[in-house]
Image 1 (cartoon, one colour):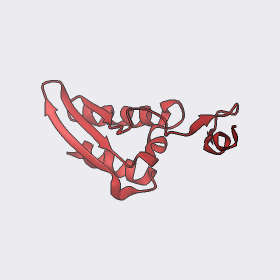
Image 2 (cartoon, one colour):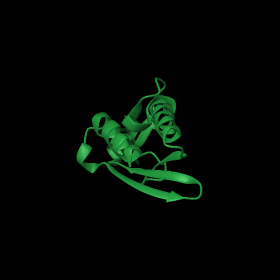
Image 3 (spheres, rainbow, N blue to C red):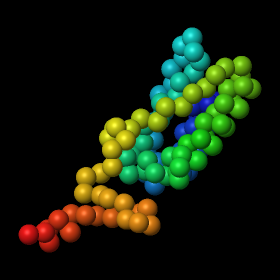
Image 4 (cartoon, rainbow, N blue to C red):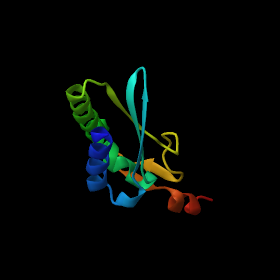
Length: 107
């Protein structure tokens, strides 16, 4: 159970709404699966640029699993299925831009 507590502690300190953090722990023949559920607005904080934050968390969980002779995997639950919010687009600086105002100007 130290893996679940560790994941909760790390994620609650990263996100802006720590009360929405829920970790489900299941054990099967493959090892331990931790399913992380967070507020969709905090998804970028947990995943990080190019997935670096999520990869770092997974690496730390594997170390904890190795100390306890188990395999620990992390699944981040995405209620949107990986889709961007509607009305959003990327500009050339790779930042999100709200395109709904531009759509209102079209004839």
